[in-house]
Amino acid sequence: MKISKKIAAILALFIGLMSVFAGSKVLFGIDTKDYTILIWLVSYNVLFGVISVFASYLIWQNNVLAKKLTLFILGVHFMVFIYLKFFDATVAAESIKAMLFRTSIWTVIALLTLIVPNYLNKK
Image (cartoon, rainbow, N blue to C red; front, side, top):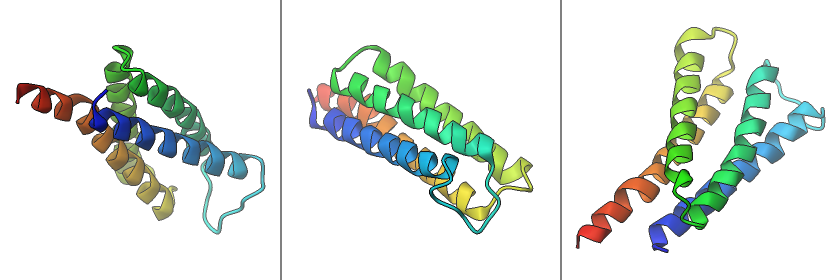
């Protein structure tokens, strides 16, 4: 497997575990914030954290579904980011920054999974 896909899988695992860990702490009341918490957004982050861990496994295994799942996660994160940024007046700035971070990481994962291997294969 190409190094780019290994890096992508590790990034997906990291962002997934981070989302599950941080979101679960908020959902279980272990961690409190000084700003408004949108429970639907925290639940979304935990769910997509689990999906990200699964995607990490698929990327590592070079499974054909990895590409589709990577694009799905990136697309949904992007749509949620746009919604939070432009259509939800109750969302905290921290939540928008966190979603921008997730979207950025998944953009890198998509590049490493989809674009870089195709470029390297042409050489």
